[in-house]
Image 1 (cartoon, rainbow, N blue to C red):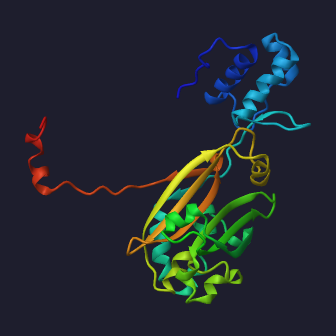
Image 2: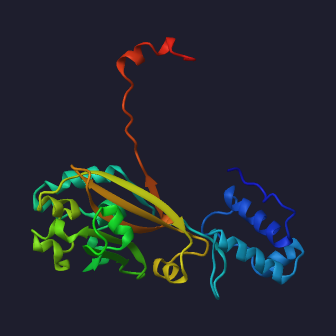
Image 3: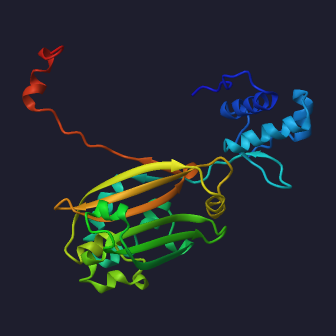
Length: 284
């Protein structure tokens, strides 16, 4: 969208915030550049301190400005983005049948975050829970059916902020033939979930990703190191086997300012007869 003013008869703080926002959008003020102080805003726009402070709060709420107690406001510097592409599902499936020496050196840390797991503080916690009505309906199992819940966290070793967070559910009955899958001491598992399922004779043939968004709670914003105004994205991945049975439900959180979802869709070709006659089919 081209930089433009908010379409209302705006109070002075919104007019100020719009002026500064449009300068940022046009590139006249670059990421990392200092913004006018409150006193400078008062002088430049002939307003009071409350209006200047309100304008700065609007910019922070839009995720455009980094500012804190005792810190001069600056234009936010874009953070490293994580690209989540649907292509990765096939990459992970191909990897699951490779030798362990190959599976052990490539995982979500490398494919999603472009960093070694050695650069993170990674943890995995397993427990067994009763299926809630919601999960039972998706898995097509009775409510209360035992599910293996797996919670994964990775933190930046320097800042302590979250790098990734996800919760996965698997029916215990599906994986109990390999007790190693039930033990979080075996994490990180070379080849991930697809290799785990391979060891019990299950092959994933389809995955569905459902993405939603909301504003974070104060606890979530603190854990992720989110600037004010940045929402969280939530991706539920549902995995199906050859028989169309749901074998895993995985829920992951992603900060919107550092995540790109990229979904490719293969389209089946039209029948050859229609392709050949497409020039005569118009209007029919």
